[in-house]
Length: 298
Image 1: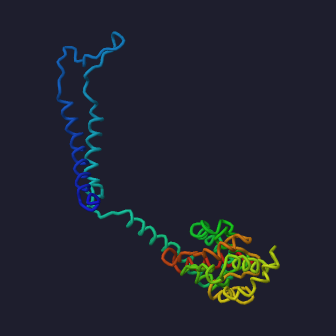
Image 2: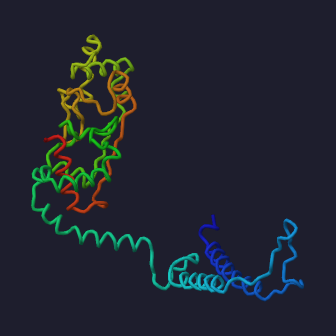
Image 3: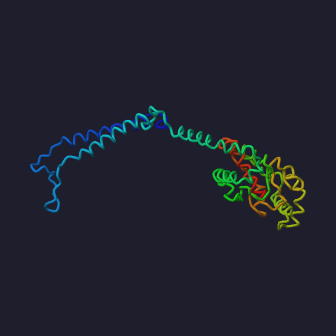
C-alpha cells in the first residue's frame, strides 16, 4: 500500500519520460556520426542478389522535424502536467477546464433561464422551448432509472400515471428533485406473527385493489393489517407525508402478486432517489419540474 501513498511512482515516471526523450536525441546524433567500414557506403546487407541497403544520411527535413518534436515535448512537459505530480507552469487541469466550460455555459444560458424562471411549472410544461430543455435534462439525469418515456420499471416509479408517493404538485416534485427521497419499509414478519399471518395479510392487501386473492385468508388478515395501517392507513390508501404507497389502486412498484407482497413484508425494502441539488442549478430544477409535472398532466 505504501507504493500508492509515496512519491516513488511520480519520480519513476518523470525519470523514465525525460531519459527516454533525451535518449532519442542522443541516438539520432550518434547514428548521424557513425561511419560504417564499407568502401561502397552500404551496410553490407544484400537481398535478391543486387538489392543493397545503403548507409545514406537521413533527410535533413526529417531530422529537424524529429528534433522539433522532442523540443516541443520538453516545452509541453514544462507547461502542462505530465511528469508525475508536477502540475506544470500554467497550472492547467482537466477539472479546471471543465469548470470554466460550465461557467461559460451557464453564462450563455442565463438569458434563456431568466425567461423560464418567470414562468410557473404549469406554463413550462406547455412551452415548446422549455420542453426541449426539460427533455435534455430528463434524459441526462432521470431516464436512467425512470426510463426515457418516464414510465419507470420495477422499483422505479412511473412518473406518467398520476400515482405519487410523496405528492404530485409542482412544489412536491421540485422538493423531490432537489433533496431526493429515501423510502424505507422495515421487515414486518415478526410484528405480524407467524408465516401464515403474513400470508393472510398479503391476501388482504390484494383484496384492497380487487386483485385475485384468497377471500378466507383476506378475512383472517384484516385484523393483522392494523400493524401496516400505521403507515398505509386503515383503508390502505397510503400516506404521502411518509411516502407510504397506496395499496388500493392496483399500482405495484415492487412487483405484483402474493409472493411479491410477502417478500416486502418479510424482508422490507429501502429505495433511494439521490437529490439533484448538487448537480443541477435551481433554474434547471425549475424547468425539469415543469417537464416532469407535464407527464401526468397532459
